[in-house]
Amino acid sequence: MHKYNKISLYKIKKILELFCEDISATASSKLLSINRNTINKYYNYFRKKIYEYEKSQMEVISGEFEADESYFGASRVKGKRGRGAAGKIPVFGILKRNGNVFVQPISKASKKEIIPLIKRNAEEGSMIYTDSWKAYDGLIFDGYKHQRIKHGENQFAKGKNHINGIESFWSYSKRRLSKFNGIPKDKFEVHLKECEFRFNNRTKNLFMLLLKILKIK
Image (cartoon, rainbow, N blue to C red; front, side, top):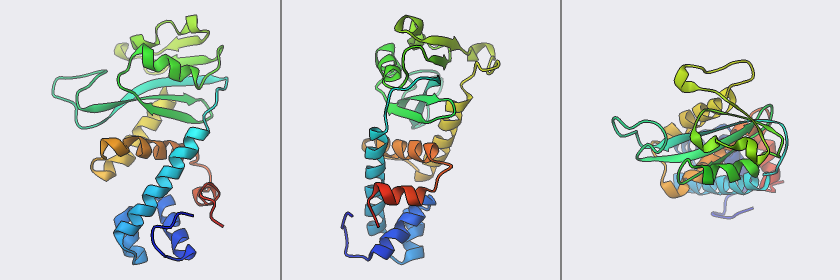
């Protein structure tokens, strides 16, 4: 286990318990009577290990997937809508229905960046549900089945043809990250992957899972 300060294993586990409950570093510091900088160092260490763990879980699988992009960060410039909104970080996400989500910051929502990420997660022959954004044009030529949902025509769900699952993840992530009142750009991906981890393991005991990941006995 990482040693930032010489504190007991018992206290490290208590820090981890509060981290799993998504308690802020400031609140954890008060509850445990431990310096906030120490709490922050452990929280950052936990996030680093979660990031590494999530990266190691990537695999190409078959099934039905929902793919979408969203924008995180500063408010949109007034009058600027849609892809490429100024001041925001674009993120691509793909969710396997009844399975896990994978998210990745991208430089722009282009076909050049998005299609390789789909291929890294979904096997050829899989069904991909998307909105009508042009970056998804030609998915059938890459060996996928493809259904679109046309948000611009107020069509949000038609039977299986929806992307409600990935949109639920976007909503959860933005709501959760807003409590940090701004995240430095160089730390954004680590925090994003923490959201991915919490979402993918929402039905599991996070404390027990992280004990294994962190190799704490």
